[in-house]
Length: 611
Ligand code: AGP
Image (cartoon, rainbow, N blue to C red; front, side, top):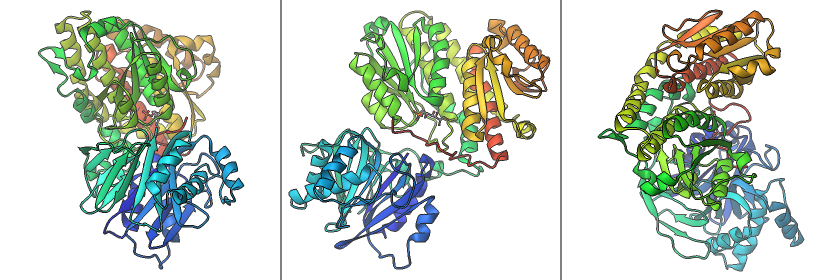
């Protein structure tokens, strides 16, 4: 999604702005621009394409100014062109606006403003705000914060907006609704950004901004109000990441770094979660009565997070004996679901800003459900709008393709399943502790898997020319198959599809022909005896010419495979956190083999903050 940065202070503003936008590149974008506040005039430059295009356009005559706003755009309304890039200006060229989100009523605003004589120069929804703000600033005698408050009252949609005016260039005004904005507090300087990564190298002091809050910054001050102009108390917090954590740490890509961070990410998510043989989950702040009254769990999520939810279903139903429905957030939002005060909703989101998931949790909340967010981003919108949050501790996940967030999401849902089982008296303390210990063994086992992934690089060369890859899984291996297919699609731009092994004979087996690559995940043998069924699936596809890669635990008998990837032994419920890892690496290596942009795959964004 779009990246937003604002700076005001003693530095030459172009440096923190460009550096901040570079730190936000991972959000995915197709154009970039900045507006620098000089006395009585704005210096604006914007270009389609990557940041380098903008930097080349910033001529030598660039004035040294100390405030400005910067933007990377992920096109929604209007193509990725120079004219549609942000910032957008009023007709006098003295007011500049940047925006992340969608102004749903932009067309009617444009008609109204053109009727007042405003001339538009782009196809974007954002430009309507620039002209609207210009009129309102005049009616408020130059008071830009007041103008912003009034403007927002007439906007519909989701947005983060920053505005700067040449008559008061060191002042920057921002507002957020359903879209991220965070304030960075420096020493004699202040920042506004979509994400702390933009200013973390300058300051770790931040302030979270709530819904419909208007923030005004100067180099030495900041103020926050609601839309009525009432002051709001700022909640400062210390950012725990350091700048290096957001760097590649010696890996070729963020994604590979994050794959190798998975043992630590899972370990960190489990820290402190078991005490005296009991799962500690005080965040849930539900009374024993409320926990006992839960009659259904509904998971709301998108993409990889949705796959984590599918795995959670097996665990929570097995351990807590509570029915679990796993819903694509974008579908749930427009349904009439059966949800009430006894429904516990798990909103799973790495970024905490996914609009589909946010809107779905609001829908569930309006029906009386209790919302527990599972999130990896401190103080983001989804946790703030939930009744409680269980943070995963995967650290910053920069690559668009989610890896360590996924494993920690699964681990977090397991904690919830065990906690519910314990609180509802369905599992004894000893059983809960035993399951938790199995979880605690996983970081070491993931390390072992990571030590054996080297051959996958060679294997991807075998399949590099494939036009489609099928993934088979059973039980908790089925969501793993879906996740493996998604990784290959989003990274290698290859068609890939995940199936439940038992579904093969109901149609998909018609896809198999000579040389079709099939990746089959053998269920962990011990608990289900499903391995015989999967062994039959392997023979069925092999007999029709498939080239089969099998993922199986040590010692498991495998026949008919071209290649076997071995996993350490683990209980069936724990296997997804191991079997997923080679699939991540397979997709990563395939993307590298194909020369794709691994960390920022085409057409994708790290956080999809539009519906
Ligand atoms: C996963 O690799 C994708 N990047 C995507 O499916 C992602 O999981 C989905 O957009 C949800 O994002 P969230 O976890 O930030 O809500």
